[in-house]
Length: 153
Length: 277
Image 1 (cartoon, rainbow over the protein chains, first blue to last red):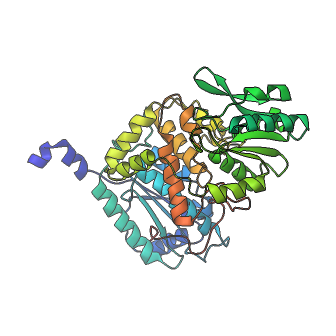
Image 2: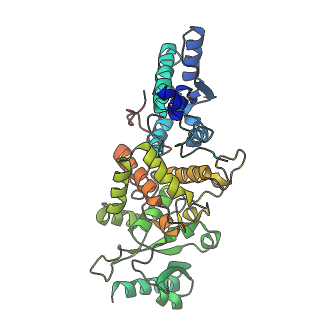
Image 3: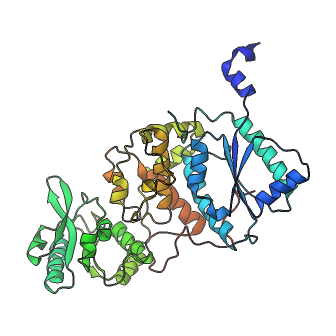
C-alpha cells in the first residue's frame, strides 16, 4: 500500500532500463549473434549498435547515447590481440581509460557505463554480461532526472 | 641588467639581426597584461613579464598573420614552453620556426624573475627536463578534484550541471588554447551535428567534456582556458583530472619531449584494462 502511494517506488517498479550497446562487428556482434542462434535468453533491455571496430567508437557516441536518454551504455569489442584491424581495440582501450574518468567525475559512473571484451565464440558470456548489466542499471534506477548529458527541451 | 632588461635586449637584438620577424610578448594595459606583437627593435622596451601574464602566447603561432612572419620569438613561461614543445612534437612547428624567450615562473629568483635566454626548441625541451620537470597543478585544483571524488555521482552531476549551465559556448577556452589548433573543430562539424548548438545544457556538457578529452595528454597546465572563460567555469578541474590519469596510467606528461608519441593515437599491449570485463 505504502509503496503504491510512493511515486518514486512506483517509478522504480515500472522501470525498464534502456541500455545502448556499442559493439564491434567482428567479435561482440558475432558473439551476440551466437547467443541468439544458440537460443540463449538475455535481458531485452539492450539496443545494439554495430560499428566496424571499437576503434571507430568516438566518445561522442557514448555522449550521444546518454543525451538521447540511455540509462546505461555498454562498449564491447574483440579481446586484445584479436582485433580484425590489428590494433583498433588497443587504441579504443586507451581512449576509454581516459574518457571514463571524465564521465565519472561529472556524474556518470560505473553503474551506468560498462566495458567488455566478448569474442565471436562467447555467446554465453554476452548473454550473462547483458543480464548482469541490466540488473545493475535496474538497481541504479532511472537516469532521466540526474543524467547530466540528457537532452532537455 | 636584470632579467626583464635582458629579455628586452634579446628581443631587440633578434629583430635587428633578422633572427625573428616578430616578437610576441606581453605589455601593460592598466592592471592587465595584453599580448603585443613587436616587429621593430625600437618597440622591445614595452615588453613586461609578471604574474598577471596569464595568456598562453603559443596559441598565436597558428594564426596565418604570425605564420607569415616566421621565425617568431615568443615570451614563454614553463607551461608555455611545454606548449611549444608539444606543438613541435605534433609537427605544428619545427626547429627554426620559433625562438623561445624563456622566462621562469613569476616570483622565481626572489620576485625579480628569471630569464633563461633566447632558446631553440631543443634547448627549451632540455631546460624543461632539467629545471621544470616537477611542474605540478595548483594544490587547490587537486583538492577540489579530491573533494569531487568523495561525492556521490548525483552530487557530482549536480555540481557540474550548475557549473556548466553558465557556459555560453563562446569557445574562448578553445581560442586561448595552443593545443586547440584544428582548422575545423568538432563543434563546427554539422553532418551529423555531434554537439548540439541549442542553448541547452546538454550541448554545454558535451562540449566541455569533449574539449577536455581532445586535450588529453596534450594539456600543459597553462590555465589560459580558465583565465579566458568569461563565466568562470573551473575548466582546470577537468584538464588536471585527465592529465593526472595520463601521467599515472600511461606515464605521459605533455610537452617535455620533442619526439613524444601522442597519448590518444598510440598504445601499448600492457595498457591498464582492469575496468574492462
